[in-house]
Image 1 (cartoon, helix red, strand yellow):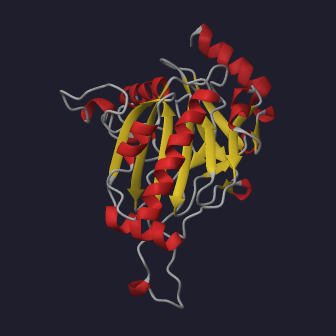
Image 2 (cartoon, helix red, strand yellow; image 1 turned 45 degrees about the vertical axis):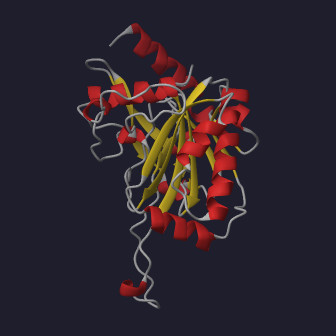
Length: 283
């Protein structure tokens, strides 16, 4: 146990249950007593068009770029390049560009990592907290991320070796869920002054029981069109944390491959360029 771990523990003991959810503005994440900002929105695009776009892209589609927050247009265009439904492509390109800009203007990040993907399952089924600075999750189609306030979660501090902290339990009855199109900003353990108080969340359960009135064979398969935006430094730390944990990643209960296993040589690391996927901790 090091001095830094002890200092993190002492601060978390004092602050943990005081940390809250804000529904006001992204900049509230800069406050020491806020670790989640949930902003509700209504989608300007009909769900049937979003569903069609997700189906055309297919489960497993993934596009990832690194963008400069002062020049978000190129990265947003690259992320949405393969979208074929005009209404969806136009909205997502404009929306993603604006959200990247928000990271720069309100949160002070010069660069972000942005990923657009189609999911058909539940990658992170257990409540956990990520080792990133700030993460934004937007479910353009499908269910949104589930989260709980700090006061409804219990942490387990690991005092051996390099130390660490994990989510020991969370009150599922107190959980909230982001809706389609909502903005969910999560402050992770890597945010300044927030170690041991990272936002507790999990992936939504897409494997729900079929509607008996429709029949399982006629049910459309569950899909989720998800945007994830991270601060670049936090993303790199998250990948390193996953690698150091033997690929166990975020603590959600499922193993995730470490970043180093997915890197390809010769990739441009500039703004707007594709980087190796950071799925180790994207929930």
